[in-house]
Length: 222
Image (cartoon, rainbow, N blue to C red):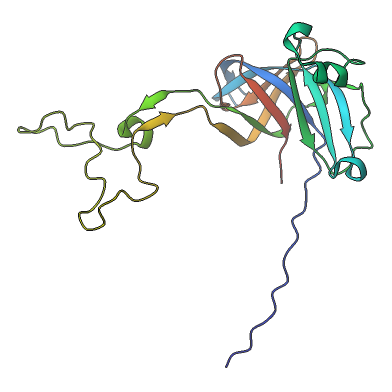
C-alpha cells in the first residue's frame, strides 16, 4: 500500500496595501498615448478622505484603516456615527481597508489624489449597473430559438429547463431573473494621469457603476 505523505497547509500572505482612497466615477473618455494609440479610459474624482479610525490587531483583532468620504447633514446620520467621527467631521460614506501595518497613519490624517502616480497598478471595486428583471438572452447570453416558420414567441425563450424523470428543476439552472447591482472588482488597471489640483485621476479601461457611483480604489493585490 502506498504511503500517504503528510500535506502541510500553506498559509496565505496578506498583501500590504499602502495606497487606497475612495472616489466617484465621472465619465469615460478616449486617451491617446505617446504611441498615438487611442484607448478607453475612465475619469475618477477621488478624495479627499479623512482617517476616522486606525484599527489594531490587539484591540480589534485585525489591522485596518477606516476612512470617511463626502459630507452629509447631521440629521441624516445616526448618533452613534456622529459620536464616532465628531472630532473629524460628518461623512456620507465610511469604509475601511485592511493593511498589514498601520504605523504609517493616525486618526485625522487626510489622503488625496497625490497618493497615486502615473503607472500605478490598481484594483477598483464598486456596484455594477442594475438592469432589473431580464430574460435568459440578455442575462446569460442564450442564442434563443429558431426563427423559422412554425415558431411562435420562441426566439427568446429558455427552452427545456429539466428532464422528465427527476420531476424538478436542478439547482443552479440559468433562468430569467434580476440582473446587475452586484459588487464587482476590476484588477489590473493602470493610472494614466493624476490631477492633484482638482482631485482627479485617469485610469485605463472601464470601472463598474453608473456616473457618480462610489468606488474603492487601492493598490493592486499581488
